[in-house]
Image (cartoon, rainbow, N blue to C red; front, side, top):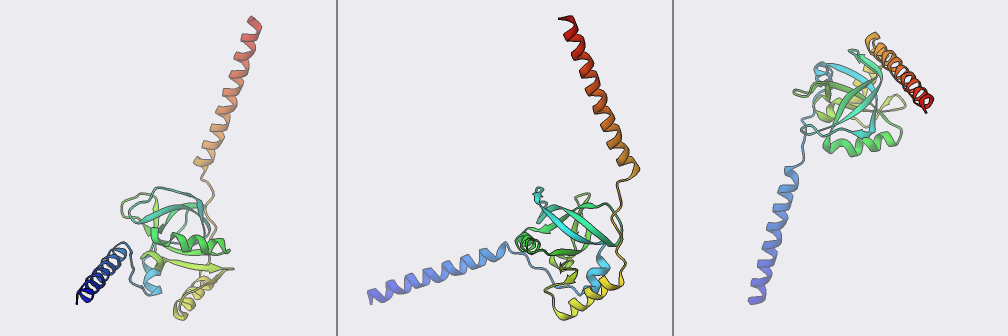
Length: 195
């Protein structure tokens, strides 16, 4: 009887621990409602294809891990060649793995509600469509056909080049450095001449 009582206590304790751990491990995971592809497209403020630059990650904002995203084409909206886009923290691993295998993304993005200049995928992974060699990957057949048709029908445009004001900043910055070096050379010659 004593052995059975100890056994039941240990078994009960193990069950309670398993229940507690399973509860807390799920508390940190996020899940998104699966949206219809048409809804994702409708909500997107811009749609781009390209790759994340996972070499440099910025400080996380809420549940988002911001990265520079090199845009190959804009399908909706327009903008620069590099934008600040994010991946949900829990999706970074598979996103990097997808790119490491030569994949890229078609992103349906909306502005982050509080961080200026940050784009987030519509409803998390709903707004991240995996591409490989220009073909949609790893979605159900309905979504595959929607996004394949989207890519075929939409005319992608190239990212905007640096504006004239940005280009002039580089020119003026370069001229300033040349002027600074010239002044340094002249001052150095004068000092040597005095010696």
